[in-house]
Image (tube, rainbow, N blue to C red; front, side, top):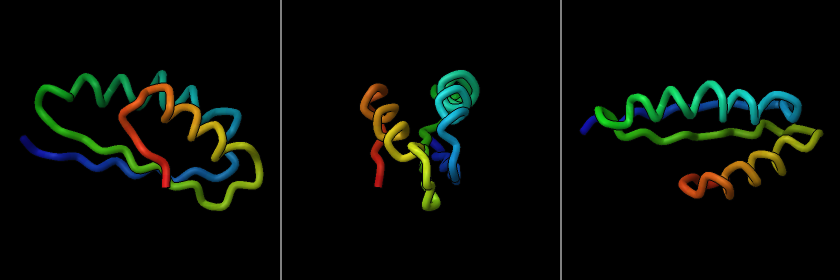
Length: 68
């Protein structure tokens, strides 16, 4: 099975990152799950807001990702 790596850079996105991930990106990746393996790489680019905390919470909720 082919693998898709999706890299999403984020910077001060606390207001929109959850909506983007849960309503836009994850459903689309799930639709492709029977044909592809995928990894989602979220890169927090030094945000000064709560973006990192929100990403960590989101990752804990979906349980199949990691934050580095």
